[in-house]
Amino acid sequence: MITAFTAVLFPFAGFLALGVLLNAIRTGLGFYQKQNLTLSISGRDPDFRRWVEDAQDLWGRPGFFEALSLGRFAADTGALFFGAIAFSRTGLGFGASFVLAAVLTYVVSHWATSLFAKAYAPSLGGVLLPAYRVYAWFLMGRVGRAVYGFNESLLRRLGHESHLDFLGKEDNGHPDQEGENPDRNGLQEEERE
Image (cartoon, rainbow, N blue to C red; front, side):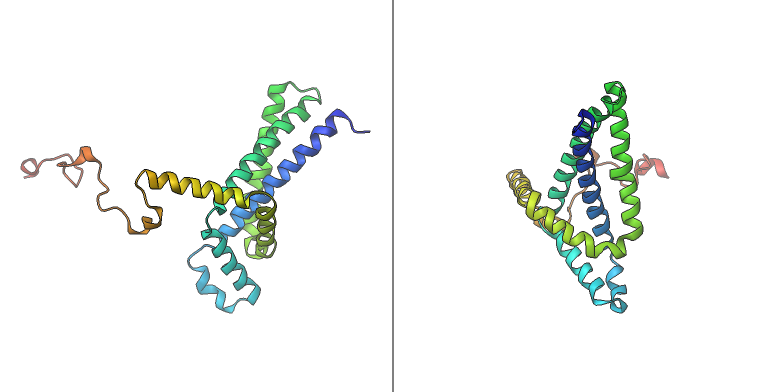
């Protein structure tokens, strides 16, 4: 028979596991974006080269970060909610249960997962790439692309073309700084002499 504690413990563990997976995907695939990595892949095996190319393709794909961010937010929210309820059913007060769930969620889903994914990123590509594809296909791939498209349409309405970001800005100065001394020492031309 399922007790009240186990009825909320399983969703807590499920949301925590989803958060771990999504954070590992983001951190692990981030390893394959390093600029010097493409120089060192010539001596590696073909699987590693394929992982680098696939990870770089995913990294630049519209909706990739949005899908991961929304999933991580939902996973953390679910873990906090069900964790607080589960720990409150052990006799802790709700405030202490929420704090315990928050600390456990952060330590497991964010800190430990990032540490593990950074340490083993070169060998995790074969697991993380298919895991993201399954996640995107079942859960958030379309949602991430929709959020990305919505964000791009808002930026266009505000007069910002994100596909031209690589050009940079011509004038990075603040309007209030026009006429100020560019070396920022506060001295006018006459006072320097």
